[in-house]
Length: 265
Image (cartoon, rainbow, N blue to C red; front, side, top):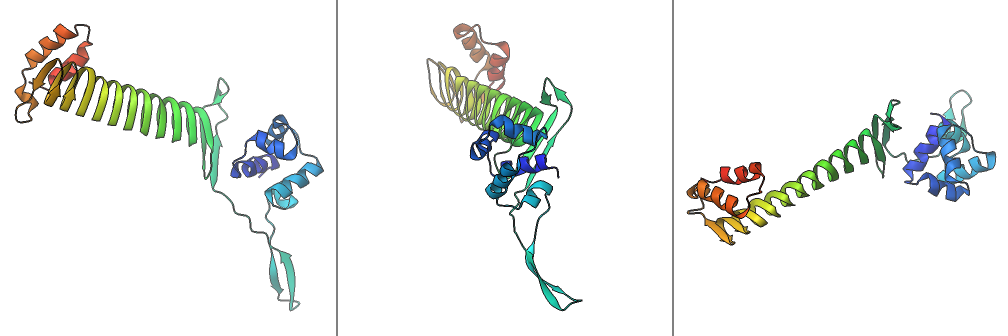
């Protein structure tokens, strides 16, 4: 492994930014960046400081070769040779960055390991990922998948986006255990239009419990109410619901009104 790659790996294993490492060595972030890009090499006093900072030998810092110590028996001489042993805990880390770029951004960037590794690319996969397509524990992108996701189309435990799907989903169109959106579908759904076990809506709500201007459900609270019989939505006349939507909200998108009507009647 080249020195510049070794330095970057050691810095990331500590979770330090280039600026933080520079502060510890009393150099600028740009200087650290040039070291890691292989444009320049640290002076001897800085190499010594790096060796002490990362608690490794100069040989291992520069060449990546690990020294060992202990006692080894020399069978030919019948005597013991003392060798220095240094045990270094290595954090597992994998990074791949494609050489092909789009407007300065790698086409593919994968950056995974124990720590706050950030991937940034058209396709980004990392502990933290940002890109057109982002996959990570924390991700942000046009299409975003992760534990926590932000984007146009998101799928995550906690999801925020235009189309958002997750245990907790917030978006223009939200689907989840707890969903908040313009159109929300979920166990607990809150929105302008809501469908769920418990549906709370500004305009139309449909669910086991429904609260909205137009409320459709087993238990309802609204200005215009449609109460099911025997917990069956099929008991509600679809034509009546359609007329109520046209009377109260004539500008409702047709596909939204059709969605509600399709669930009854």
